[in-house]
Image (cartoon, rainbow, N blue to C red; front, side, top):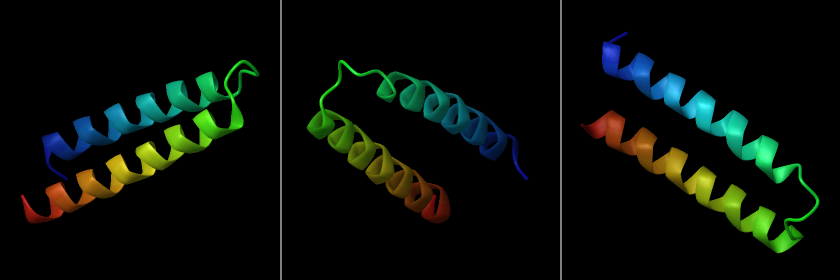
Length: 54
């Protein structure tokens, strides 16, 4: 495993933990939570495609 892959995995893990800890708060609307999760999944898919082809 290359060093860049390790760094990407660590960044994804840290961002995931922070995002889902923020989304547990009740002040954020249900639609906002859904949009944040959709953006997160889209970002992960884009990153996976970029790493695969790059």
